[in-house]
Image 1 (cartoon, rainbow, N blue to C red):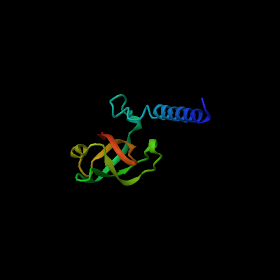
Image 2 (cartoon, rainbow, N blue to C red; image 1 turned 90 degrees about the horizontal axis):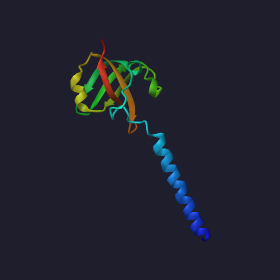
Image 3 (cartoon, rainbow, N blue to C red; image 1 turned 45 degrees about the vertical axis):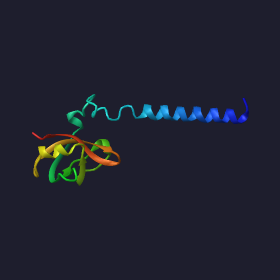
Image 4 (cartoon, rainbow, N blue to C red; image 1 turned 180 degrees about the horizontal axis):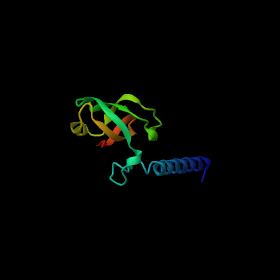
Amino acid sequence: MNAFSKLTLALVMTAASAIACAQDSHAGHGAAAAGQEAPAAADLTDGEVKKIDKEAGKITLRHGEIKNLNMAGMTMVLRVKDAAMLDQVQVGDRIRFAAERVNGAVTVVQWEKAQ
């Protein structure tokens, strides 16, 4: 085996190893979306609906700290996982919700009306 072949083999092995590591590190992402494990009630964040934009699939919430995103409480516009979710709430409703980063955007992935 010549030097070029050895180098090519080393590069291929390194790339394969990197891909395997990346897949392992992301194995748990999307578990809730796949129905495997939904966030526990303690992981939900309190919020109040301030505005609903059905066309854009967005909701404005005044919310408490979103711990899994290291985000302080504030009022902000969030995307929703499914625009049909917006039919379940009205301005003024109090909810408890879970949010995640989806394609770089903070997205509400589930919610329930607060008791």
